[in-house]
Image (cartoon, rainbow, N blue to C red; front, top):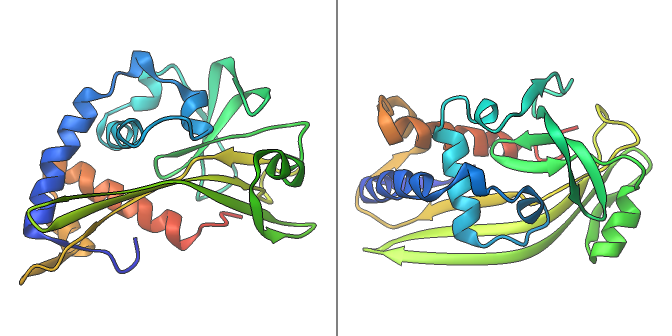
Length: 216
């Protein structure tokens, strides 16, 4: 997240919260349609994101098969069975960092956005991007605020022509004013084991997503 800064206290708080959230997440209870359609609550989104960032072979454990997306900013997976979301079915998911999006055929991005009440930010013949904020939540402990923002997005990308990609990106960041701060780059250098490595990966992937948000 560009400009994000984490204090030592904030890092320790996140390091504590991450394994708890990940341990609370049950892959067997994963409700992908709810995550994609923004029907899940904030703890569920955070639990899934932390688990996905920190779990080794998370996709394999879910029975997903990774395939080439043709896009350096998207990871693509084929599911064993189709899932029902947004009034249709698909067996294809793509991820930006830990944010899932369905890959839909037979429906246009403008039509789906209108159906879901999403205002377009970009609407052109070669590109569509729309967003509707569903939830914004701040949690404060010992002067450190952990902010989570969930939005329902619809986009198109050149690497997936004639398809639309709806999903629910989750943006989280630490806000604090400590006397001594660590940048995400310093966190990366100090992330040598356990939850710190997952935090580093999570921050790096979020940076990539924010920097290349149209991903196509």
